[in-house]
Length: 450
Ligand SMILES: Nc1ncnc2c1ncn2[C@@H]1O[C@H](COP(=O)(O)OP(=O)(O)OP(=O)(O)O)[C@@H](O)[C@H]1O
Ligand SMILES: [Mg+2]
Image 1 (cartoon, rainbow, N blue to C red):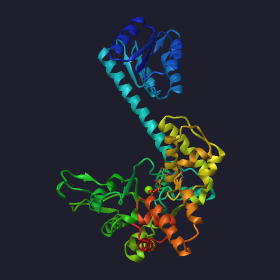
Image 2 (image 1 turned 90 degrees about the vertical axis):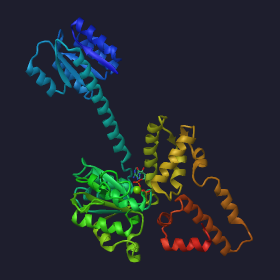
Image 3 (image 1 turned 180 degrees about the vertical axis):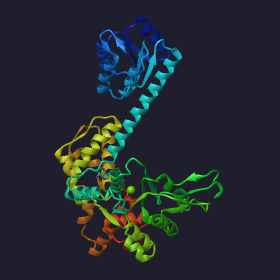
Image 4 (image 1 turned 135 degrees about the vertical axis):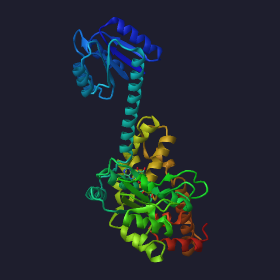
């Protein structure tokens, strides 16, 4: 930690330097504004101690000057003749604190420590904000993405419920976060609840919270996701995976804004904007009776389609550049440059897992490829279907088998590989391949796939 002192009294400089160095800080001191400002540029301190009356000017003016270039760095003013109005002025101009001479050494130590903690926290916050803004930026200039962007801006400011459809990895969560970020609730929380990601028996206690003693293991009362989202946005991810009993309860929240914690009769009210997402075919589920019709109509006020990557291949180079930059930052390496041949290769690739898959492939390239300038042949071995192409070709030209046998063989290999890609999840695979789930299930048993 670096501390910079500007004070014209030599004794003060010496005693401040001594006590702060004893605390383990690196200290530099200057007797004039001019030399202090020059020192600032070089050392980029974490805290500045600044005297008010200096031989070559006024410390308050220097404060103003420093704030312009280093708005985050805390500045502690120190002054010989205590003067309330200059203290007030300094604080108004953004000074962290104002200490009077004679200086109390314990007070100096405490104030410096506080300023350093504050500075560290501010920097952390700025970094987190930048990270999250960047992490949730929607990249794309294709016509479908431009339309989507317009639609998001149009519906974001209202409180309308939104249902986002789309294959996995297309950016459904990203759309939900953008809607929140462009709404009047943007400074409140965005809470994500994914009913597919937690065991069924925990869905209600996670969502509604519970009272102490509601069930074995409930040793204290806990707020649910709903309460966390009060005033903000509640994102119900994978809503199609919620079981019917929970659907009934969430319907009541949506209709009346009311719910009870598990193990309690007391009714709570909340105000949260609801955005839901699914990669399943909800109308079909309604017909089969696995999704409540009333809930479907409540949620489906504004439907938004998250387009698959194959409908916007012109965005692939933009996405590659975006991820190339992100990954370089994240991994602390230099940015890799994709030459036209490599870009073309990537653009021709098929991405059943959409943007998420593209991102994973980029990560693989960053981790496994040492080159910085990439041509098609450098990335070829790292693409998902590498190595299988030649086998497939051999299979294709085989002379004996009948058409029916070939077709069956193709189906086994193709569906087998696609199922593998989605971890055996039938609904995700069906959605990605544009098949009805029931058709896919039938095929799987017909072909004897596991
Ligand atoms: N247009 C885009 N621009 C930049 N990044 C994107 C874009 N679309 C998706 N991504 C990134 O791809 C990843 C997957 O996006 P997201 O989680 O929003 O998809 P999803 O549709 O919710 O997927 P799943 O169904 O698997 O939950 C995220 O890392 C996201 O930041
Ligand atoms: Mg998602």
